[in-house]
Image (tube, rainbow, N blue to C red; front, side, top):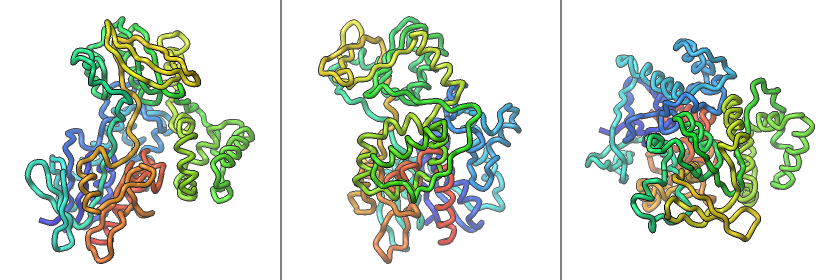
Length: 449
């Protein structure tokens, strides 16, 4: 059969799109969801079971549905979680909320559209007659749809050095995917650990390590040595910002934002004021200024924009003060094998080489920048001319309605939701942005059914 909508992916973007489609499509419509992740919708971030792993957005802004802003807070209260809208819930609870929200929509079989979950991976695609695009699956089957939604996320960033010279035993002590938390059980309490990357993932993994009884030292190495900053428990009102009045050159823009931050008394007021305007600001920047931002300002944007829950940051800050965790700034050059692993790096601003000895190396460099190379399906779609890579390496080219440009006369419309649309929207990895994008895409599909 040919489905009215085919969603390719199994993370948060996919579940948000499915939930909105179920609400908007008529009973006669049909949806297929292609994904091979057994934790459908929860993804890596929301599958963790460690209570210390918190959301970095207050609960009051984490509803799955833009028209029901209190839905997540209501769920927390119904499940006897004593949290308010300004509190930071655990990621595990958010994953359970996502699961329950989808289950509630699917429970009423008689008054909703058909939804089929296909546990498989799409490996290729082919255009079919009748205005449909068919996806070839790794189980030998094919699924076709008239409207397609690509909800493919991004993978873990790879380490910037070649580890092929290391023995199998040594490579077993290099944790390339830290979200497979089974590695924690293999670390002895007195071991030494080097974490590569100093963002939110580093804080999550360091807290998990010490929560498992670790008593050794953690050395963090990143290019600039910057760590995320904290939310405050009682934030001041966001400053009103007129995006149209901001300068278009990055240097002038940063000057204005710094000046306004001083005037407002707390830089968080500026960041919170920019929050709903970021996509419009990004779309107004010329490509040259976007490149300048990515090259020079991105690390500072990340630590100010993607902040940590106040109590989590206090715990992390205490570990820095006690010396349990230390942070170094430098560029990793090589990893060698001896009695332990030796990491050679060039300290920031110097020409000399320094070293770190560690029993374990943990890759917390975060997610790779959205692109096509990590996905065989996307590579095949590019080969066929169905998609085009974003010129800045931020996913694929889409228009302001999240549609992939297609030649006129083709009845199949391909949409994209989530990180792959960063070239168009930039700020499209957080729940508040994705849920609105998913709603808009679902409404556009509903108009075609």
